[in-house]
Image 1 (tube, rainbow, N blue to C red):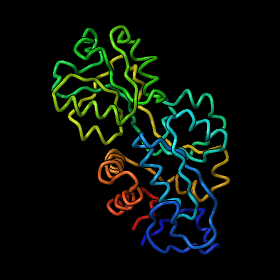
Image 2: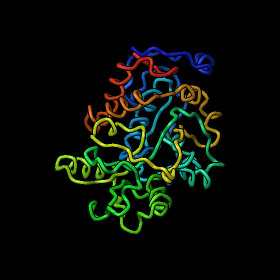
Image 3: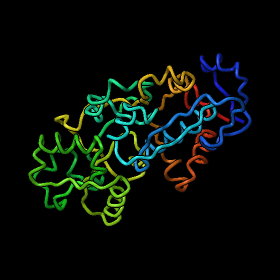
Image 4: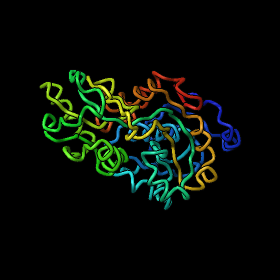
Length: 301
């Protein structure tokens, strides 16, 4: 049975006599008896493992608080920010607003509420296999285009990381003169990386931190002496404007979320690698059972 940690405004909501009745397995099976506190729509990108894992964590947890949760899968970040600003989405749980998503915040930020900064030290970078001993910096890629077939293997074309690399880093280092950025999807990038590692081929890929793949693949981040991939930044849960007024108990819960590298990577790894597609609720239950004190407001077994 999950035990509720104190959330200030839930003391007020307790007048509704919300009673825990068992472990949650997703938004459609809330363990709360009593009146629902409202419906919250969570936007996420299934191919982004951070977005996927955090969306299902909020699905589980906010269902326990007493909300009806609807998960809305999308394929690009831009529509998520537009949805938050327009009110068709209530939450995006894996935002990089400082730099990576700065252009979206410039366009939509006036209609978006910042609910919490839950991770500090996020980074985008280029990476190569560790067996490439002579390549340790982005500067080392200059003049090596033929060795990499003139390709940097990237992720989704609409990702903030993709834009930063194409528009800033590649021109800054002169890589655009001998490399093309291959965009497709995060799973496709990982497939290409796995194949290269198996055959000990040369490959350069786009990666980021925090991300479970950094610990699972034999790769190293390339130094960025010009800072062209962007400064370290923070990760946030964003809501549509007025979210905390409409959903105060959810806002109080979200304000308590805080994850370090180990917790974040274990959450992603559990959801992505230890369970099959469609079993995300069970993955979340397992992660919570293994990390019952992960953060202040976690509703754990």
